[in-house]
Amino acid sequence: MSIYTAIATSAGRDARAVSSDGKLDVKLAMQKELGGDGEGTNPEQLFAAGYAACFASAMRLVGAQQKLDVSDASVTAEIGLSPNGKGGFQLEATLRVELPDSIAPEAARELVEATHQVCPYSNATRGNIPVNLVIE
Image (tube, rainbow, N blue to C red; front, side):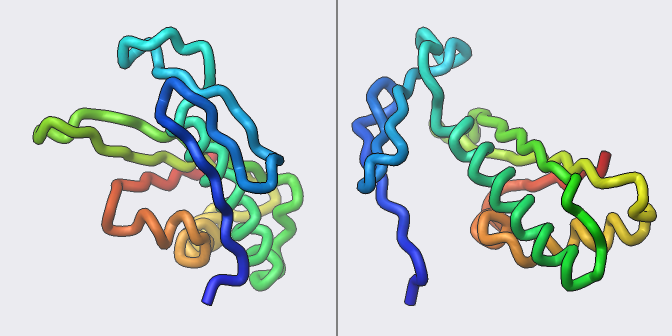
């Protein structure tokens, strides 16, 4: 049973995306790299923003459990789109995690790996798309 359900509607990459509560209302546009005008955001950017925010929030939870101060941490998500060789497309992700210098490298790796097990986006993508974790 879900504790929250997000609902959004769109007619495609050259349309709008609107959430059911109206808090999200964005113009979408096909990327220039795919032959579009690039005059709006795209699903990959929205996915990157969601994954970065979700992973950072999950890291605060895991950091608190591990008694690590990650209040100055940030996550940058890169979502790649490439042909899958079967006439369609596939995604890949790189998460660049910036942590405070006070966190030792081994503790940082343990934190990021544990977060990758907790984050809902990581759980959704596991086994479906490659996700590269980079600690910066």
